Image (tube, rainbow, N blue to C red; front, side, top):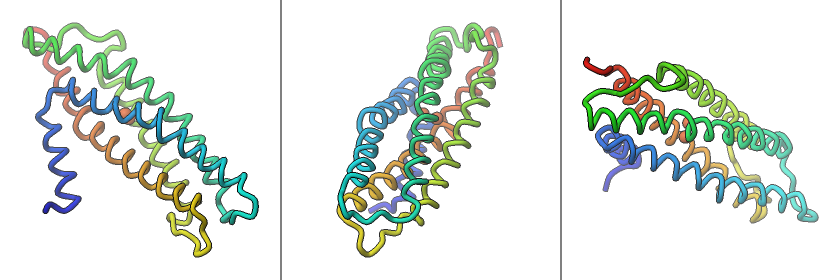
Length: 189
Ligand SMILES: [Fe+2]
Ligand SMILES: [Fe+2]
């Protein structure tokens, strides 16, 4: 049986060779599941925790919740920028490369490097929010008296953190890199 790190490497290796269109679809599925499932669920868990009379309120919960809201707001903008600007341009460039052997016309935003630089900055912000959340939650160490809501919340936050790290790693180290290589192949080159 493969260790988790080997499985991650295998997954990343597969994405290095897959069509960019499938990689983009995979990433958009992650976005959708955060928007539709994980973000609302986590918000609901925070609400429940606050409403539960006598529930233990660990220190840091207020900062944790605040950082989560900031992460969520940041992610909403970030995912839209990826889905509306960069991802369609990547799929277009790949289509041209397949059909005509070149990356096709220059996208409206100029070089592919422009949106990628902006999105990499977003990734740094997201990393910082995730780190602030982890710190506010004391490394997600559950207090002994933790109730079921808190356990579920910490579990959901840790799963979200892992999923986001894996997602941004695939974007930065595979998708963005491959997009830049592709956009380097200009017509007639
Ligand atoms: Fe993304
Ligand atoms: Fe991203």
